Length: 152
Image 1 (cartoon, rainbow, N blue to C red):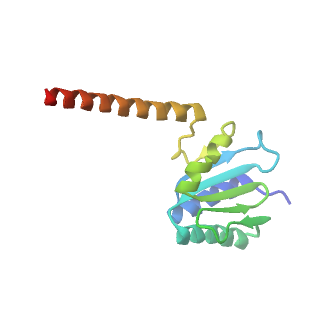
Image 2: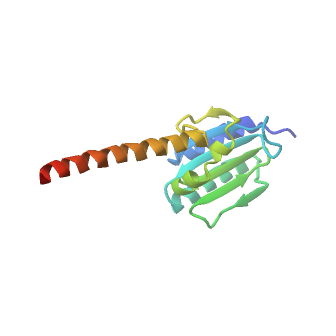
C-alpha cells in the first residue's frame, strides 16, 4: 500500500503547531535524499512539550494505521525523531536546532510549509557574525574616543 507522505507531513505540522511547537518547517527532500521523501522539523521549548508533541503525532498516526519504522530520543529533552519511512519528524530544542541546523543541511530541498524559519547558507551566517563584530568594534571605538576626550 502506497502512503501519502505529503499528507502525513502536513498533518504532523498541524499537530505540532496545535501543541505550540515553534518554527515548523516541511521540506520535500525527494530529489536530494534516498532515505526519505519529507522532513518535518519543529522546535519545542522543554521536555514535557517534546513528549506531548511526539505522543500526539504518534497516536494520531497510529489511529489512522501508520506506525513509525523507528523512534529515537524518547528520553531526550533536546532531540526526538519519529521515522515513518517516507516521512521523518524531528522535534528539537532551540539549542539543538541552532547547533545542528538541519534545514541548512537540506538547503537544496524544496520548502513546502512552515515558512517561519528562514534558511540561511553558512556563508550568510558568517557574514552576519562579521557584521555584528564590526558593529561592536565601531561602538567600542566611539566609546574609547569619548573617554579620551573626557580625560583631556
